[in-house]
Image 1 (cartoon, one colour):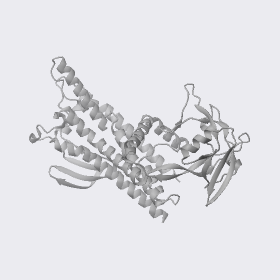
Image 2 (cartoon, rainbow, N blue to C red):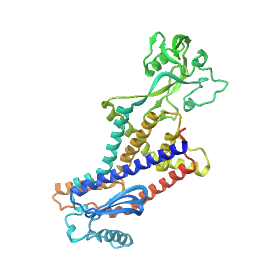
Image 3 (spheres, helix red, strand yellow):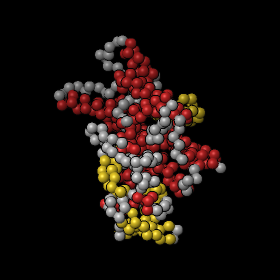
Image 4 (tube, rainbow, N blue to C red):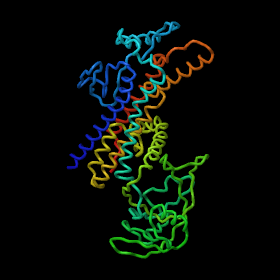
Length: 443
């Protein structure tokens, strides 16, 4: 049964990835056709073609490797300028132009991509990422309105056995599992709190949320306070003295502990009892959707900026045999594996599984949105940046009364395009190998 559920989760995620790719390419295809650009091919995947069918002037098909997709548009490269130097690199450029021009027929005049106004080219290239953004927003809306977000409750899930001694230099060890002889017992453990207890009253105040409880604990450091807990219909009265302790400052957006300019960790002194809450899905309202999407995009943006370093760390763990970071990036193989584990686990119910899978699909599409906007060819953001550069040059020439400087020529950036494409392929290979050899296990 577990294996069948695992395979089912992988299949669901595979279909979600393929659908996301298909809709991304439709985001390019629709405006291209609206602007009368001839599109010979619309393909999902790379490599050899498994299935295709020609409708009108476009061949629609599926290829063997579902790691992306593309539409081919006529006239991506403008003709070479008359001042082009003749050398080995210029011959490579010309070969690329020749391959592109072989598909152009006399009927295509006026239907070439480079002949479009700048704003239309930008619309076409932004169409794909916009589809991923819309999918991400839709998933987030379904998640928040239909299922809700996981919110901490006032019911205790785990009790710390001790309070770790923390300084500005070792604050990242605040949540380590083991205790030492120098670590005092946690107040919660000493008072007799147990997993499953629900705290209803703390320091004389009725407790209605985890945030309120946290604030009360932090404010009552070194003060003995009465606590009321309930479990299985029974009520108990306890006394707890929150321990004044140094805690690291955790940044929810970056998922890391904050540091000072000198490299030490930022800390605060607060009351602490050593409990963590259970979480439950709590439905939200429509006004929470866009802010949550914005927060997710901010976190993804911070992750993308560090992507090369984080992939290098994964590659290093593969070579040296060291432990792979639990928060390291994953490939489509890792995403599929995660979906399989979510579907197969018995630690969460069906509703939570569905919510987690929807969250995974939404986050994946928001990641694709951000990633594709990187202003480097061959990504969509590179084409947008090129069109914007052409628009700036055109406007500057008009202000000076000069002739049109000509369209943006992506051929001249082919060496950079090859480097970027090679880097992406290398990162994909490293992550795929890591997801096979040293996968991240969720449960």
